[in-house]
Length: 55
Image (cartoon, rainbow, N blue to C red):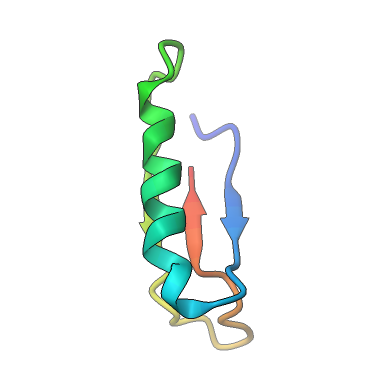
């Protein structure tokens, strides 16, 4: 069951990987059972403003 989906946009495109790496560090939290951090594939026909997705 997915409980939350969080979308992140970065101001500078060169910071996307740093944001992704920082979010992956959340996996070190003991109560974090399962989550995924992925880059947006930018295939939305309406908006491509989202850079990183966490679910």
